[in-house]
Image 1 (spheres, each protein chain N blue to C red):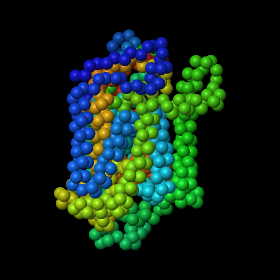
Image 2 (image 1 turned 120 degrees about the vertical axis):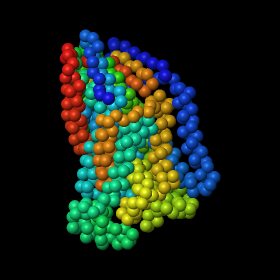
Image 3 (image 1 turned 45 degrees about the horizontal axis):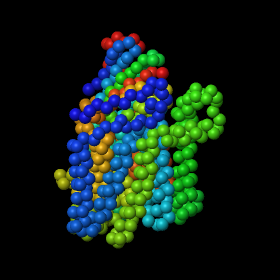
Image 4 (image 1 turned 30 degrees about the vertical axis):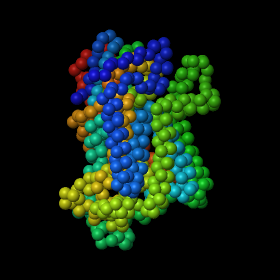
Length: 83
Length: 502
């Protein structure tokens, strides 16, 4: 298992950290968001429930809105827009 | 397979979208509901059936149901002490620090009320720099492991294999660490060795062989026991000593100070930016008070969990002490002997029976019990042989609490569709084993973990609780620094051959 990061299209990226536990999902998300340009979107997939709280709060603090949340069983998919 | 549920948040309201991570509602499957009934039914059956055998089992069932409540609260609030300062340092998220402070203050109020009635089961621990060092080791370990001692229990209830490995590592490390002698004896300062010999321990305890034995009897037991009440000249069991000194001075004021620091350095900037963009003005003092309060309630789940945890922890002390008075005992060792179990009772007739929430000792005990059954002599050290014993996990009150904690967390996870069996990968397994080992060592040096050495002690006005917490914060900082470096390195490797627009 490894984290998977891909560019899906112009300004749209995906990060898959399923299988990881704290603090890896929030750390990868933070570091990827730091690299994105303003307006870029990140589709983030993870399956560690407690990371959902931390990532949401982190996005609030950083001012990066979560514009879409999906859930399939225990898998979360957040779409985050870089402010 | 559960249906995909989509919750789209209007882009026009970005500030609202993540102000509190609301659970995305999903229908609970029949399979999950069936497992909820099975788990609750099993614990209920254990309580009823054992009570039918003898009313003494009520004592064990009290531990069981408080453990169950703790598990539900921890899972509901995703309540993990490891994430408190780790997430603050790593990603700037203060929610867990807030949750822990709420729980600690509530627990302190309830436990002080209990203490003032003379029914408290709490005993303060010796204080010295060892608590800070132990906290530091524990703090690094909990960041590496991805969860603290209690967090790993509730995550095991979510089906998380990494957390199960962490529990295994904590358990084995503690059990081995408290018995290590031979070459380790050479590392014992002469003064500890000499002081340990003067403690008058029975011949069954080989106090001159074992690093931890000589550390405990030769160093820790020599240290003063300090509470805020005693510092201010009060008795711990008086109303003024418990509520004013231990709770208000020892918990409420430091908690407010700590949260104010967290607000200033981690929350204030966003609040000010939002206020300026909303109202076009700079904040005044009243605005900062509102900002501080907004930080406190920013994660309702965590705050609610903290509130219930705090109250339940205080109530457990009250209930356990009440049962001790009812049965005329001071320790569960007597109860176990009365119902016919004398295996693994310590030399002074006791078993581990804290009377409040605790995590790590019962984890060490089941490995110690197993090792004893396999032929290793674990009863010649102070930890098992003199203080805690190694009763069978099947009748160990604290083990009932931990097993029920996992069950309570599983019930809550099932009801929230968050239960999933997850096998540990090689990478996470290594971190789990390393982190668990560090937490195991830190726990034994501090005589407790994030719950026993920090949460419970701090809430009861024990100065050593804050000392352990200080070490834990330092350990979390070091752990985060390491993981930042590790993550950067890994990301660079993963992304080396990909062409991005970044």
